[in-house]
Length: 401
Image (cartoon, rainbow, N blue to C red):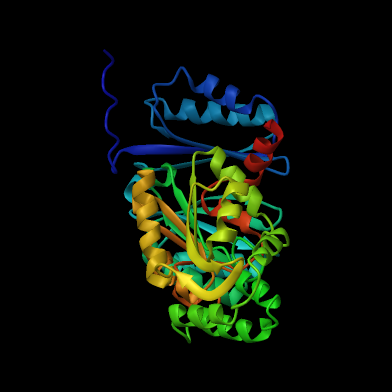
């Protein structure tokens, strides 16, 4: 049985070695190989290469022969033509900080002014940026910042406002082991997973598309009760052939990146559900095509192959969507705090609020203003970056198939 590792206290002396310069093979191996004879403990290591430039930092306890350690580190740097800086301090800086959060910034494009404003917002909230990593360059630029020292809820509110003003999207998640747990993604369908509104496409067959579209827009802005608006719109569909639903399905266009997002996350064990104010005839086909695990939608009444203008059973409205999320989470055996909800309309607000991470996707202003996280780029797969997955990992997984 090995001896327990001694606890590092905040007052214990530490030394930080940082090597910077042209990246070369063998730097890390040589540094730690030369440091091996010293009686030190490695507290932290971070290495980053940007366009061929290396930044390697090692935080160590202080040995009796600290001068010898410093000479050794400088000799390693000189051997590779690297600059070496040495800083003395106490303890592990990260251990002293409270509030650990992951801040993801999405921009298309991402400008320096936006990065400056976000960094200032983190500082103003009492936070410190410990690490910055690029998640993706295409189809959007996605940057992840690991932040300590600030309350994640305060960060989310402050940075969301800054992001909106700067024309970028910002998402904040509290760091913790739950972030790596299996998740359930619950998605709205119309104008989220697919482009456009199915009911308006069906209405085109009845010659009342403009009237239905006006009612839909008012409902999505929160000006009309969704249930009442659904009844009014479905009434206008009376007499439409049921076969028109199949024709509408054949013309559906998914949001850019939708298939990539679902394929990537399902590889990682995520479950998916569709919760729609639309209609089962369409939703069940989408679910089968994309491998969706659960779905809930409204059922149109059909008699003699024709729509009657009525809905059968309970309406999946704003409250119904939130209830469906909880029900699907229970079926999947996944805690509600590990659910991700994505939607664009006012009838999605309860679902977004009930989830662990609610994302307003290209949403109406009333939804964007109330959701904790907003994504306003047109690429649905940008959401994978909010979950800590890089573009390189997505492409590598695709290439492996």
